[in-house]
Length: 204
Ligand SMILES: [Zn+2]
Image 1 (cartoon, rainbow, N blue to C red):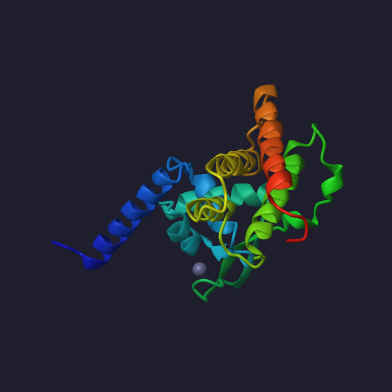
Image 2: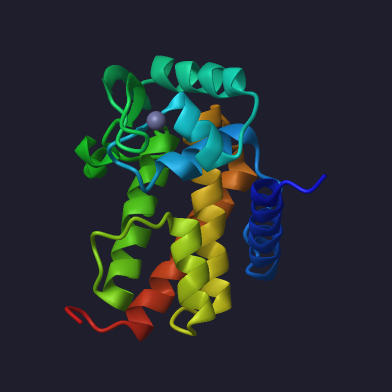
């Protein structure tokens, strides 16, 4: 018995998986990471039901559990408002603005702040490449697309994905990087910064 809708979603899923493998985006992402990716470009947030579909995380109770954890850690705020995706009055997960944190305070003892600072710098580099600020794509998708368009070298895109993945692990899953991971974080940013300084003209 063929369900056309289910077949359609299966095909979409297979296409996405191929794309992710082709462009080196981690396809074996954990549920919290997929939720983080789904929430990242949606500043107005989403209810648990919509997030379950967008992040491809089931059962819905798992989404509920992860989001309550994110709320406890002050990463999202859960508020009874109209969900911008389904339009129903529900408990919506609103990402709390990372941009409100002072960037100058980042040091080695404050790894999440350091990673958020690098993340903002990466977004700044991407914005300089294509003069686009109101982009709703996440960093991973955007870097993969620019790499495909030959606007971003594969190695630089790879460093961006590495920093982005580590940042999500630290911020959303409470991962504590050791000295080797910290070395990778510093070196990955140094590599991106070097490419930026030699390849992108200031004020382009
Ligand atoms: Zn919704």
